[in-house]
Length: 132
Image (tube, rainbow, N blue to C red; front, top):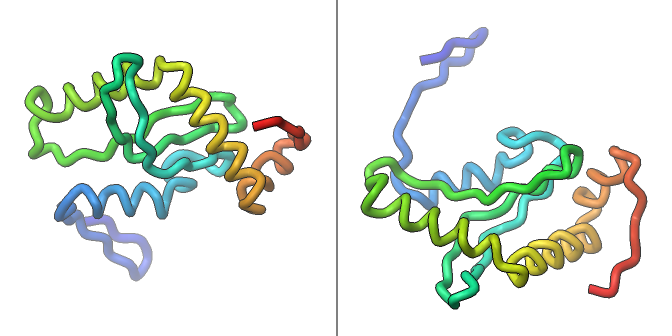
């Protein structure tokens, strides 16, 4: 338990992965920083055609880095479930098509979401026109 003023916070387990994914999506800015874009779940493929769906991607605009997000319950087992899944995702992000898909998704979000566009404005990064 954590006590802060009159508030008490208790540790409780997540019931399923969907609950973890919702927390990550809803609180992405708090978890990853204020200068990020959070890209939702999207199917990506390895060069060999194996599909996988990470729980999202975080693009840290300020640091010019991006990360794949995968929320898992520890009960799924590291070697039976988690490691094979992450391995496939790592291979898929090496695909040029996957990287282009992530870029197109980012550009679409920036065009349609004023809050996302403000991330760039706050960092004094000007808008660009792109043929995507």
